[in-house]
Amino acid sequence: MQDVYAFIEENRETYIRWLQEICQQPSVAAQNRGMKETANMVEQFISQIGGESKQLETSGFPVVYGEFSGESEKILSFYNHYDVQPEDPLDLWESPPFGAEIRDGRMYARGVADNKGNLMARLAAVHAYTQVRGKLPTRVKFIVEGEEEIGSVHLEEFVEKYRDVIQADGCIWEFGYKNADGRPQVSLGVKGMCYVELVCKGANTDLHSANAAIIENPAWRLLWALNTLKTPDEKIQIKGFYDKVATLNEDDAAMIDQMIYNEESTLEQLGLKSFLLDLTGIPLKEKLIFQPTCTVCGLVSGYTGTGSKTVLPAEARVKLDFRLVPDQDPHEIFTLLRKHLDEHGFSDIEMEGYTLEHPARTPFNNPLTRAVVNTVKDIYGMEPTIMPMSPGTGPMYILCQDLGIPAVSVGVGNFASNNHAPNENVIIEDYIQGIKHMAAIFEEFAKEA
Image 1 (cartoon, rainbow, N blue to C red):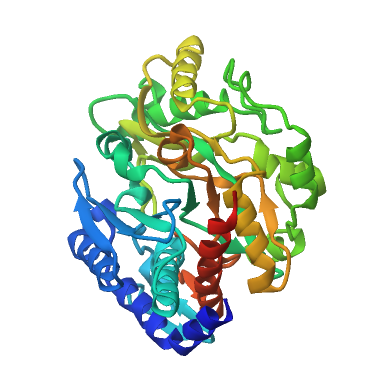
Image 2 (cartoon, one colour):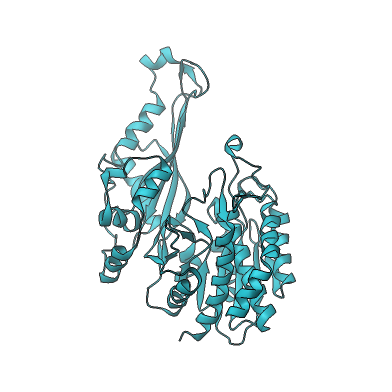
């Protein structure tokens, strides 16, 4: 592989420029901003490096599909997305969010870590390998959607419509990071999610707060409903919520034991003194990876501007996400939440579901996992941290495990990449290493039985 690695080094400025170009193009799905232009750009990149590329239509933004031939019929696929989060709050960025400025060895841009850096590293790896060797050792597919940041709302439709093009022997999933000590993470799954909005309505208009003596306040009512969901010691009180949570097996326990989680650096990065419930060590890692959550993501009601306004709000809203673990079902959790609210006297509170995604797991002992893990040391000079499952969420289950396709996550981000936050970044050397790692995976995966 040294010939391929040398080519990557010789062409590093080209690959960095590719990343800058796509990061300078806004692609905010939530605002339908730059989406068509970015889909076209991804399609053109795939075509320019020798792939067959087309946009597959959905009821929302298209999925860009690309395919490259290989020496064997074995298929390695890549799932990525071309949409990014909104760049707000703008005043906290140290350079323009879509400027893709490079300073102190990092590129700063909205979407550079999530997910354009990984996408371009994988395309660059295909380019480098084919330029040096002439042909990839396996067939390679790219599935690049445009709605991941808004919940992959039409991906299930895509899977049903284009099931024949999705099939693969393994899938490298969209994300990947390094720990604070520079050790790459290899993740073997994702948590699921049940994301809902609760709405409590009162009078048909905001009122003077003097009316609070006789008119019910929907903000208080919503808070009382929320107080029934979880106790201060993090126990979720929805009846049946934990019934299908899978118990840890020996492999899970072993991976948790070897998993490196730098507590001190993480707390320092976040400006905190301790983790939730003062957890450390094995219990902390188990809770992060294998326990479900109930989180208030946003809460709004009444007047929240500068100064005071004595108002009795007409409505209160809260957005909640439940991160789910094997073998919880997001649709069942949605139903259990509705039942819980009804049984506690809150049947008037409306519920709307946004993201309902199953948790997903890939076994450690499979050819794709072995190919990824076996190539880490050669590229990074150290063993990876193997994450049994990421604490984050994505549509991995419907695109991979539900179709019998193992999926593994590894990529070019770092523990301070600031995904979804101001000053999102990747380290340039991590990006170049990521290109080399993808090229090495092509060859190793082709050898695995």
